[in-house]
Image 1: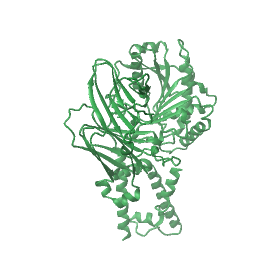
Image 2: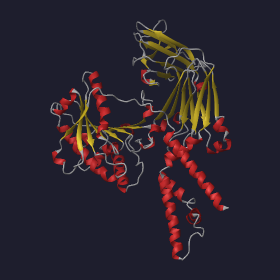
Image 3: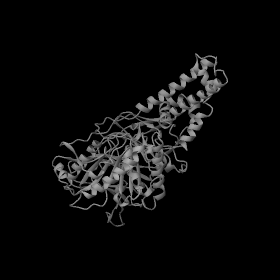
Image 4: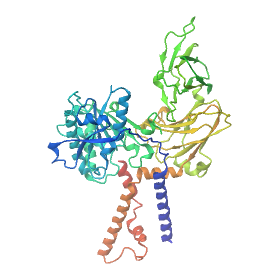
Length: 592
């Protein structure tokens, strides 16, 4: 009887793990990246390193060029800002093409006032993410490249090089400072792309583990001294990056907070992949719109959304008694945030914390032009629009299942003329606590909508610098996966509403909406694989060794560990019993 139960249990667990891997590998948004294009043929000009060929026979240094600019590179007529691109695990030196080409086109737009010279290290596509023995060698080669690059400049005399590292290349950029005798003034800025700064993705090599420990310990110990001049920017690829999850790319606890920027690419503006008045205007001359914002019991905030292209577009002022206009205006443009879709230039500002009088106005400046301009202004009471919802914990989810996964764990109806809602998700702390929010529009007016009109959802996780956006056209249902890329830190002050993850809803005032929050079971399993899947190989190996130990001891006594050799899983269950201690030990080891 025990055997069928054990087999059923094994099949069930194996099926759940397979479902988790399926979710991990497939459940993410469509690829919204756009290709970069060249208009001339790319060329990679090798820079000779005669003295170092014997020590680094497989490594090369190249300069990127295309078109007429290539001739300047060949003649070493360099007068721009030097940038060195460092590829990562199995990375090709030709990856620099997209950065170098775009930088060249951008410099042409500003008449070469700012120009970057791109160089790239070629590591012969070594597997630096799997074998740490090559990392120190690559770091030493990059140090030589820095000195060589600066020696090429005759027209100007730059004193430092900007480093751009992809994947393990970002770690090599930081490792430079651990080299004996390295001149720290050679590097002031490091930009990393999908670099696992916190720890290796898979620590299967002792050299890799030691290299990480050396680099991160050095940066922690010298953050306030010899590394004070270095700024590090780290970007993570969010859920589409199935190799390096975002939580590994953050710089928390490694680089000084005032010298570090960690961000998910989904949170980068223009990269993502109720209403008092809605108007569309064409203007032939500059126009000022004055929006009253006087004290009122039921209004303490104003939400303004527009597609204006001018950067300084919003300010507020107080009209003095006896006059009909303001004498000065305090800018609010620094509070601007951008929204998808791409190329819509949609931006918004929420204003609440300003001193108000009976004659306080928010001024919107619309510059002259032929472009159609949309303005949406919404006065509201934050007690009505900024809501706090206590997320169900694991126990609540289990006892309410499957209703919580079908009918929803929460429901909210939103009347029309409401353009903004914020829902604080209290208690959302674990990566495996996953939900799907569904916003259904109904009773929408007939409206000839532009491509950028519709509904937008934004999930913000303050401790991880995470922003995830999704957009749906006017009158269409919209959904967003509510799941964390990094768990809540132990020392995070979760009791403050502002520090909780929150869902922001940017809605069209011509529709009513119904919000439903449902438990996402498959997402939870996928998150388990994403965060703890690497424990599975170690678990399997531990079980095999425990079974082998039992078999060896039994053989020494002249017996066998199980009489029924046709069913070897009985031997594992009888002798290894891994389910008692191995999962707990591995989990504690991984977390610590």
